[in-house]
Image (cartoon, rainbow, N blue to C red):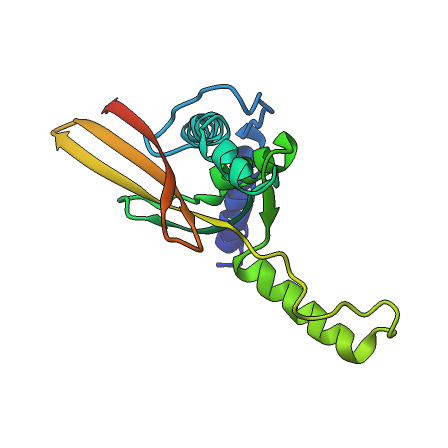
Length: 196
């Protein structure tokens, strides 16, 4: 019995080593388009970010705001991008690119929102007790946002036997927080034909 158990253990070990040795990982260019499953992937995220960045930074809302505010740059906070699609899609991958473009452009100011803002406020609260008076940051001095960026991801799947068409539509919209006026709406539409 011990002999059989030893043989089985050896076979399992050899199989595991063989499987691990057969795996091959290759670094690729993040900009390279590789579609494996037909689901949402890094190419879709990148194309969405590129379209949204181009649209939002070249739209007239920035100039309109500056004209009415002595040339001041608009301040934007990013809200929720709701995923209503049939897949798990992490919107942060393209939203972060849009945020980065705001800062790099020098035309739009960005303030933290969501959990990061809560973390900042918690740190500020901690400083009231633990930091020196000269270095302690005060409450009530945050930069208020002028606009909030929100959005949604939707998808439609049409399938027949081993073929399907997947359609994604990502919408982002920018709203004036003071007036509730929507000043910009952008979208990115992606359609994929998948056969198995």
